[in-house]
Amino acid sequence: MAGWGEAERALPPVDTRGDGSSGVGAVVVLAELERMTANEMERAFLGVLGDPEAGEEVRLPSRPESAGVARRLVLSVLASWKLHHLLEVGELLTGELVANAVRHAGGRMIGLKLVRRPGWLRIEVRDSSRAMPCLILAPEIGRYQNGHGLRVVDELSDRWGADLLPRGKGVWFEVKTRDRSVP
Image (cartoon, rainbow, N blue to C red; front, side):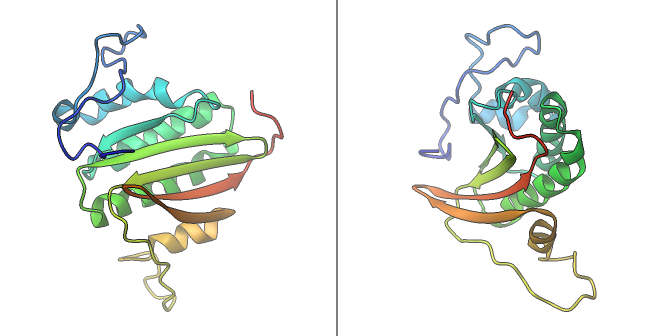
């Protein structure tokens, strides 16, 4: 997370060709990421998140289209992990966290990380802001509009929170899985 790419710098090598090759020589820099379409980002980063034990993070440009990319990545990873019962909640809550990061953090990059442990799934969105999120408790009318996305996260996840990082924060949610082992 160091530096959070506010200056143009190289990210870990990824397969940007979509052909499944090793990705050697396919280093993606921030400027290239910002030019990639949502489909290109999805192809580039799906393999990075797919290993449940690696705990790898992908970095996406902080722009509204990244919410859709993040949701599709989460759907693909959860399906590959056979966590079909979590597809809907994973997609919805990831979209909420990414939208909040894009709307409120002000940085150029956000990070997405999925971690699977026995009995739990954790999805985390990282950004460069150290301003902690706030759960708004308001009347029921219009409860999911304008600032109430964390209520959705609070209601649908088993637990959620935010951690200060050396250069920003990570906002995460966890949901219980039906299995007790990680493949």
